[in-house]
Image (cartoon, rainbow, N blue to C red):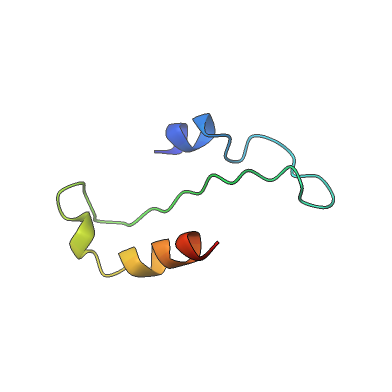
Length: 54
């Protein structure tokens, strides 16, 4: 997942003093969750709500 995040530009470039170069890519890691049970993970809503709000 970290490699995919990097391929999307996450964390690879300096954002600059004003943050204008900051990537829009985001990565959330939900420990203990897999692709079959991710929707039932109690931390899912807290992880995606800020992303959807932005």
